[in-house]
Length: 268
Image 1 (cartoon, rainbow, N blue to C red):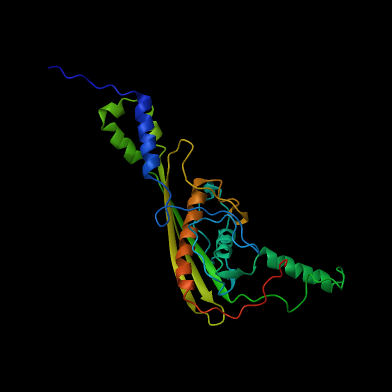
Image 2 (image 1 turned 30 degrees about the vertical axis):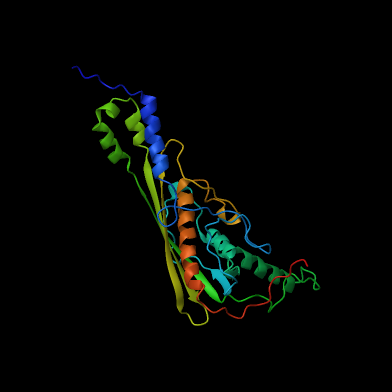
């Protein structure tokens, strides 16, 4: 009895390979990613991810500081220089902290103070006044190590060993574009009064970029997310910080709340 060779159309095999990659490599917390989206403010967290871990109320005022050692990122990824704005959004959405600005916002306040003292601004204005600024009771410092592993060559070798796939023109080239993207981050929380490090948490995320247009599930939005949604690398880093903050909240919930300054005035 003569055996017939099974002829598999190239389009069918290619679709099966891509579909398998899509089905098996999704973005998940801990080993994948999540969604950083929405806003935070007087109305509370709006359009935040359902996976966001929250506190019942703020435990302290919080400032975010740049990591003095910088961040391990490659310029070719076209990522923002700092992840601090992204972490600020997550921290404020969680409701665990009242975030005070120690970056561009503070510099603007000091500039307004100088203008007022020099006589440029009207005296009766209430924008700037000495002694009204809120102290940062805690400081949160993010750190980031980002790595990208190219698995295309390994998959290409597997394809070459399978005759029915080896003979499909262009398939090996498509497989060569497959990359595994991974990010590892950490968040360190310090009490500014005692200098004690109160909590630390790590976060991680990974996903598969299929090369043909790329693939990272979920979308990124909100003011803190600007610049982190343009590339798959940015989305994976954002997901890793989201994962780290969720783990940090577990520790923060055990802390007794400090005496907080008056809340911002809102409409009745």
